[in-house]
Image (cartoon, rainbow, N blue to C red; front, side, top):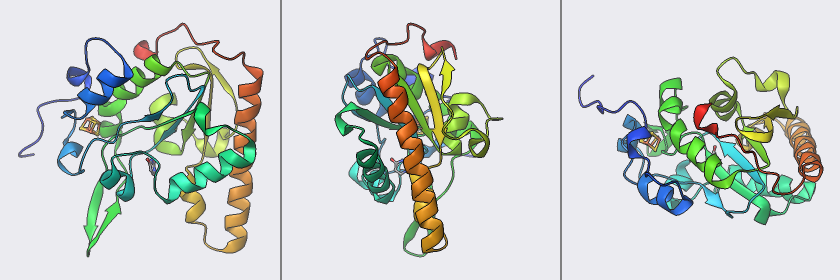
Amino acid sequence: MPHETPFQTAEPFLPKHISLLALQKASRACRGCDLYKRGTQTVFSEGAREARIMFVGEQPGDKEDKAGHPFVGPAGGMLDKALEKAGIDRSQVYVTNAVKHFKWEPRGKRRLHSKPNAREVAACKPWLKAEVDAIQPDVIVALGATAAQAIFGRKFRVTKHRGEPIADSFWAPCVMATVHPSSLLRAPDEAARHAAITAFEKDMRAVKKQLDHIKPHAKSRHSPADA
Ligand code: URA
Ligand code: SF4
């Protein structure tokens, strides 16, 4: 393919010393896959350094791409509402994405979301691992299939394992997967939407339960860098 980036992953772009600030700065210049050419900017993760939960989405959407912040659009609104209902304090939450550039296709004047492929997810994974290293969350929640496959591997099925707490020593003391909040917005009718939101809220309560269960700051001593 002409003009393809010579880089296979984000690895060469990572800073030597991992700190959130160093990661955020370095991520702006990432050329780890071709997606940097399509998105407006790298949308890095956000939240408190001491956050106990990390939510991993798929990739920034149209709004996030323009704003430069994750989960500020409609999907972020759905997530915020469910968190509030489950009694999860937003200050305990860190939000990130499996892929940090917006992948889109033109559709008239609109930019239509296009799912990142396995190669792009793999290319971006060093950022995700470094973020987990920096934050050391007690609970990681994969939102949707892309995030779940970045964390658990490509054979993982969210439909089969949603809401199940998984004790994973590499990533965090507890890792869980659920659907992406944008899927709630795509429900075909009001009844389906209501059911989807109810199920998502149930998963958020399961997250809260794990959070209450795990001793605060019982951070994993294992590095996800080997995962
Ligand atoms: N969807 C995601 O997966 N991430 C965002 O940041 C916004 C929408
Ligand atoms: Fe780098 Fe990830 Fe953006 Fe690809 S999507 S250029 S790997 S930050």
